[in-house]
Length: 587
Image 1 (tube, rainbow, N blue to C red):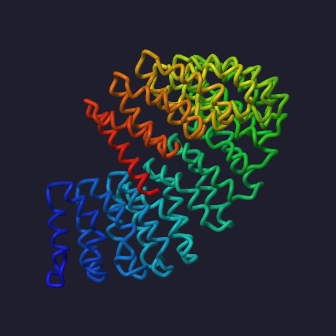
Image 2 (image 1 turned 60 degrees about the vertical axis):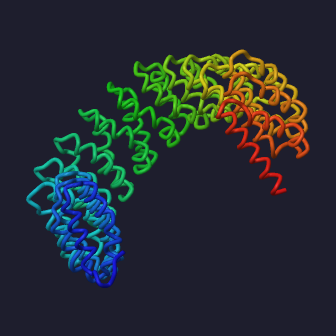
């Protein structure tokens, strides 16, 4: 504890710990900065703690990162926003270090502080800091400066605004590619604060410089600027200045730039409007879907549904569907997987007829793909197609493939099918379900993978909830009870799990007459794992059955199990007995 007699204690401890060789101690002391600042008080924090931190040139990046993070929330500890400027010097120093993550965190903290500072303080303290960093000898300072302009600019007087725009323009032409990259990355944020009169002149000339950069790492960041600037400009300026850049980038010699265009294209369509999209961007998108680099095709395929939503159905069928057909048999499994994850969303866009004629054959080919992720992605989105074409057609065309996948050699595919079964059941209706899928649900209870058996037990519960206790009594429970004598103890355990889940759905009467006797019988099993699972199931049945059944049937069975030679059986039996006592006391 700190006392009034030891005012120097916190800062002395901090100094000692920050000079300690053990990095963990140094880290811990930085993480406790707010506690130390509270102990020192606002004035001493400003006069002693912050200057000390400014001089503390710890060479370990982890400590510097923690310091950059802590200082971002330090305004309350230095006396509020009127004293916020005292936090700028240590963060300015951190903006110049070599480690990227430290610089980024320091710039983030400066933005957080700057956004709370008073306008006059921004002009007196923050803007000079931005100018110093932008003129820094080392590229690290200039990189950090680019991320601060959007905070500094709105509060600057007109003369300073001209200077800041000029400095940013110089950053866009800096000798170091890292600085130009940072300028490209932050151009959208800076442009959002600049007056519209200067957007067309200053910002667009900076943008043009970046789009013609010889480094592809700069050009690919300029692609993001296309979307940001497109939203700020008038449509006619967007068509004149942004559209040619997008079309040019879609044919860029670097695949990484084309990849960025494929990722951003649907946002750019919104910026330029419907007519230019139809004439200029659809051909560009088709080129990207047929790109010779798999990564570009993956990005383009993943956006196919979003892109189709912007177009009318005729355009989508005419231009995009032929490419989709090609992609469904692409040589790269990752392209097919990306397509499979979104292609179902095209059904509502194209309408019923086009879906039946054009998309269904593609779905079927992807459902039979050799790569499990492709099959999985199709299965998980089947409901989107069902809404468009109806369950009859879906069951005729896709159900045979689903049944085939239920026995897929990859357990994750089987798991996806199981999770989809309740939804399919609600769509197919009880009669159709019993004919086609009922036997499958029982078959999964004997699967060799535990996750499948567990999911199958949960699946039975969800089906019982969907079709009601009477249906469960007729179709599920007799088949489950038949399996209680399975020679494999793991399968017998699955049946116990299924019983505990079904009991809550079918109610006390069926539980008493059908399920409980099976559980009691299983308590005499020779395998300890079965017996302690019996104890767990009995515990779960206590709230479902009557008190008289608990006392006459469940308690005696648990008492027997509590004297079992196996320690785990005794533990779970005693736990269940305590649960009975607790219920009896509360009632």
